[in-house]
Image (cartoon, rainbow, N blue to C red):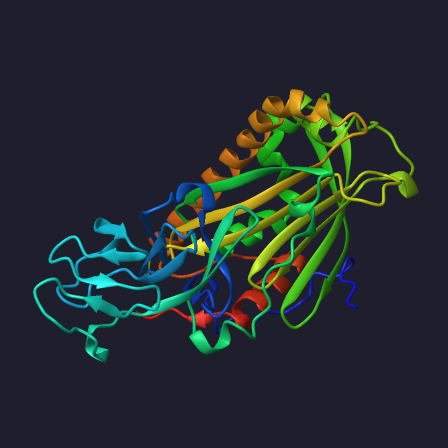
Length: 357
């Protein structure tokens, strides 16, 4: 365990530009909401410039293929889904779930290796469709994300699904660094962040915080989400927030003082869209613990959505400004001093892959 609460002298590998580090494809990534893919329909999604077509045939077993016909390279998602196959919209070539071409309408036989497109391992869980965009042989060896709160009746879940035009590392840094509450002053009031401790492993880093309200009233959205927070509390009675990046995912858990289960449990994955990885699609689960009178959370849900939308919008705005600064400079020139972010950068760069130029 590493405690860096009183140190700002942690070093970072300056030879690796974090904004030029790609996300390792050998993990399970959510790429679409399950509800967005209807029976006998196809949907195009992206991972780091790689176009993938998701297909939900009549048997409801989603499959994922390289999104181009082997014939003329036309995107398969513009075709039709029929008989548990996807048919190219140009000449009608048909592909099964393995990516094999099984029918060319104007030829008797098309079963050869040249008439095949890549297929990807796929799983549907937690309301998302996950694909494994890396090496096919690694899919069964890499653990699938475990998000128990998403399966619990004790929590109500909000699905997060939005495009943000910045490198995924900005998203990790934004959530990990709770010292940016000044950005949210109009929504949150005067909040003082108290940094407690950072811990780090080979592929993870996590940081503990607590908070103190200096000015302003507790926002209604926060009150309905976390309960009424007293203005003055003793150190042992304070709330606890733990933010963890366990590559490549990120979580935030918030325990109110004295509670054993988190009042807020957040899970995020930031999926790069373009080959330069300067834009991402954030898929997440915001799980809020139901109070003893569970129906109250449903009543106050619109206030929570409004409040969190405001927070997300401000974070999106500032992260996109950071990306614009990087684009103008052509390299990362950040003067980072916060130990948690320095350690986070080490985890992201040491577990990431070079971006192909």
